[in-house]
Image 1 (tube, rainbow, N blue to C red):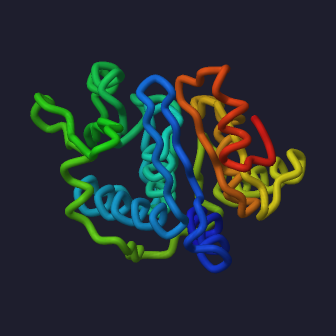
Image 2 (cartoon, one colour; image 1 turned 60 degrees about the vertical axis):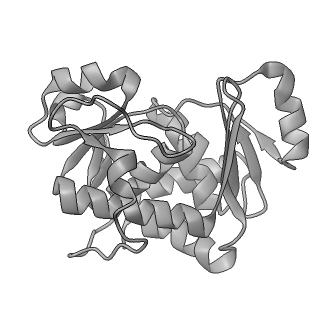
Length: 238
């Protein structure tokens, strides 16, 4: 069982249609809501893309240079579905996943595998004018299936994040969920950036480990957060 299966399968069994990730961008007015089933479909599509086009397999290394976003959650979970380790340094990765703002950084790292660029566009538009060899996520991911079946087992003992095994990361997520008082009824409003491991654990993995749901806000307008907390019926704020 992969880390992704350990996190998502209990939620899919218990509440597949319930909102799992709700994403706001206060700079653009964007709001998108994904159920557990829709999230799992995106994860599967991204995992098939990573494996079939990028050759990401167990033991591979992926760097994720992306903000806290629903697509970032999808590709992180997709990487773990493939058995990859998410690393912090692009130069140490086989593949770098980045947004437009960090494309130059990703290209400068010159990974042996390549670069996968995400537009993070609300309407699924890709990035025009990408350099040769850079894969456009928005264009390619839609071509892949909604189910992912690994070609070989993905042990929880394998590295998953910065040297931590999937088992250790799952244990940390569950421990932090308990510390934060999260459970399956929790709806968490968060403005945390996921670039630090601790914030990724608290802001995403602990929520999933508890079976709760996440309301993630990018470029937060402090004057609107309380209204979001109430209108989204949140129970916890990070």
